[in-house]
Length: 77
Image (cartoon, rainbow, N blue to C red; front, side, top):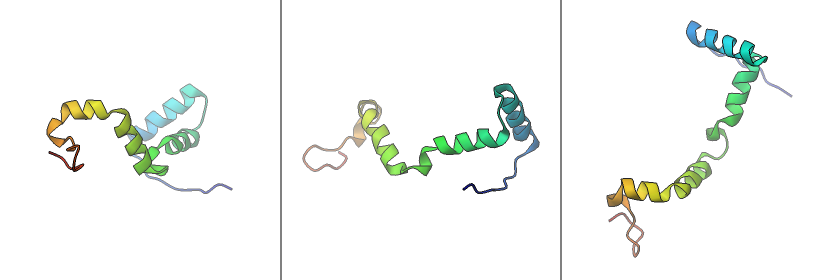
């Protein structure tokens, strides 16, 4: 089963969607559906954020050393 929704787009965004759909041989509806399906906020955003942070932990540690947790307490130093 599918559901129909209505959205409002300004003329420029709509024109770009139409051009992209034509270039890809698809429809505006298909483009919007694909974008929504890829949106991580629809699938457990907390898990997605935790995975991202775990993957990039060393980069965050280097960028924000004052926010690194104290190993004993687990709280930021």
